[in-house]
Image (cartoon, helix red, strand yellow):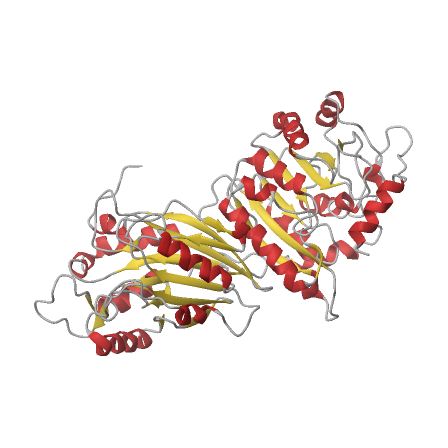
Amino acid sequence: MRIWAALVLLALAGPVAADCPEGEADFAAQYTDPSLFERGIAAVEGLDPWQGALSAVVVPHHLEVPDLIAGGIALARETAPERIVLLFPDHFNQTGRGFATTPRGFETVLGPVPNDRAATQALIEGGLPASCLFASDHGIGAILPFLAHYLPGVPIVPVALSIHSRKPDWDALADQLAPLITPDTLIVQSTDFSHYLPHHEARLRDQQVLSILAADDEDALLRLHQPDHIDSLAALYLTRRLTRAPALVVANRNQQEVTPARLAETTSYMVIAFAPDPGPVPRRFLGEEVLMLGGDLFLGRSLPRLLSDELAEDRVIAAVLAAAGGSPLVVNLEGVVLEEMPVNLPHLVLGMPADVVAGMLARLNVVAVGLANNHARDLGEAGLEETRAHLARAGVAAFAHGDALDIAGLSIVGLRDLSNSEPPYSDLITAQDLDQLIRPDATRPVVAYFHWGREGMTAPSAREAMLAQEARARGVSVILGAHPHAASDGPVLLDGGDTILFFSLGNFLFDQTGPDVSGALVELRVFPQGTVFARQLPLPDLFDRARGLIPAR
């Protein structure tokens, strides 16, 4: 029988006894061995704190992964909150279908954690019951020593959440908590994710949660299942609603990764930051890889002359480094790279000087380019091979139609549905092409990079929708698109989050301008267990930057 079912039976039989201290005394420490916490603190000693405002952090409460708990709390150590609202699941159903708090403080093996008595008393007066459950629930007990260490003296407002509560209950509690959530309040959400599934199933549930958080889709979030996806949907819903800030997942690990024994039932863990304006976050936090993907890059026609001006080139470089945060980049290279440019090259035959391409790719931190597009063969197979040779000499990896590039813990597969030289010129991707998305290593996430659609499109037609579903059916985690020269508004979930779709990244740098031209970036955070968190970031018009047309702030 699953442990979850056992807990339910235990809850039906009656509450787990928890004794309050006498009078107004603080709760005693749940754990007396400091090494349980010190090893997590030591593991993240070199972790830099979060830069800028931080509204909330989500951390696990299993001491099997103390580095993840420590790492999540350590991110907030320089944010100087005035209070912490600590949300956690009531593991032993002592709240029934509701919630509870306490006005008591806490002793821990690493020092005391005070209570924000004025805030908790206001909650109690508003109808939230005071409870003794805080004496023994590990959902809070495993977190408190880390708070004592990293945020000493900051008072907390502890709130236990019933696993049986529902959205109307959460909304009512959110209204009650809202007055406490100021810019100087930090929400700490103590939550574990997928429970009681073998690792391969848990990994899929984790990917669904990651995609839903990236898309910020409340309807999809409310369809998550306890405990297959998460142990406290109430906590995640409340954090999202109270912060109104986007999520950035910086760690995702499964219990199977920390033990050599094969487990039939596992637990998953995430560390999530909610920040009002996270922007690009290039650095690695807790073992993940970071990679940025962009749209169409062309460095021919008017661009070599423009970029020969050092000021113009510097403006472009500065804009890209700001938008991408310095992360390694993968873009779609439109055209043929040539040692010598032919005279009178037709306007729609895209050629680029090799020296300009090599110099710009190096300065932009482009580590790989896609050649699965309608211009890579503008000068035939010989032109494509010359392009590959120039890129290899520049140390830049390349992937053409049907190729898979293994990079940063994932595989990127390029597929083009369009060609300028091959009849019927469109609708070219076949079932055999799509099968290239099925990679031998099923634990490695796959990104499908499609060249599809029509210029100016920002949403898929029936053709692209069909290709996206076929990619999803082949296990692809993330779908990206290029060719329309305009960026789509944001991600779309496929089948509840199995796959996340960014229909068009538009232009990276292209000699086009106008109101219908735009670009975007997608930041990928790739986790060792084979999941990926993908979020869309804005990109300014780099062609306008090259020409000195910088919009006023």
